Length: 478
Image 1 (cartoon, rainbow, N blue to C red):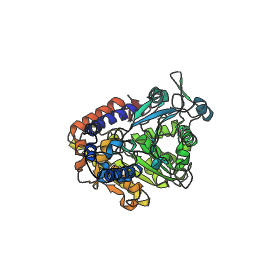
Image 2 (cartoon, helix red, strand yellow):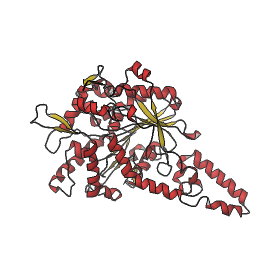
Image 3 (cartoon, rainbow, N blue to C red):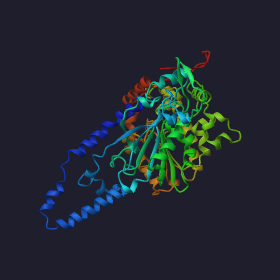
Image 4 (cartoon, rainbow, N blue to C red):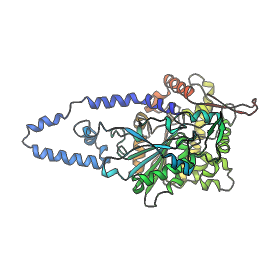
């Protein structure tokens, strides 16, 4: 999923969010105050309000209580909090020293928004950005000219949503945590580690994503409050979600054992599966990246050294997951639209091609079989929907409204993370009677939604194919 695709996804989900915020902003301001002026118990009432405000401010979980989350006096304190994160580009001399470059040879970067309250100043959510992969030298060169390959192409500030939102009504558990988005600029899920740059179109292209991730994390630990963090969550979406599976244990080792370190993965469980033409074309392309960017040395050591495992398999979530030690919460759709379009090569709505519904059912069955591995990890939770979705945690609407087992992803993650629900009861798997069986996301299965989503993917994502009739078998098309 490209930067443009990710941005457009955000825009598709922001109308609901804007209307919600507009509704809050246009309510009567402090209607209670005029009544207080006439009350003989003004002092007592004001004292009660002050205590309530302090409790709501310093204990974010109280926002689950109705009077704390209402759109009256209390909510006015937070409704206008800025959602933007600010871009930080690492010093070029530091990137030169470590050889940690984006595809264009420039330094890596991240976005940051610091916590406002004392109660959360030691709590950090660090997210690995998604954005698909680049499949060959020409594709990576083109990517180096975009925000997914160069820090210099990024805006100085940008908002993020869902689990990274600063709006307490959307994100009551984490809204005032320190937020970091590590920008994705290597096209290999932060895993590339090739020493020599590749020349294409008389330009050097660098495959150094593993060094980028290591350097940015070290820089954050040395220059921000992350060095004294007590709670750290490493999250990721799409290709950044795959990066969490690949690197979460290595990142966790950078913190003292006393730090509560966990991972949350959204839309990163990409299957090694045949397409509808019976080709393993996604596997073929990922293995090409594995070799091209010298990914091997940066992957999970437990997986790499496991007996009977081919090393390239450790570049896939389903093969590396059994060797992960960090507690994880996995968010994914069993009908992930990116996987339908690009891995299955299934490019029609079920109503438009009922003869191909068998491939969708096959994918759903395989996905549920593979995700059962969660039950072998006693500290892990999951939220597996049947929605036509790729990401649940980074859009306000999907974070709050898509439900499985009566809970939204927001509620399921919060209950798991804060221990309100034990891990063995934090595993939510959706209905499987029919692809559109979940009423909370039935709109995602409409033909209109399908068309808008697939049009966006066609316009913003490099397509990739396997053809037994072409000399190199693997090829990419913009």
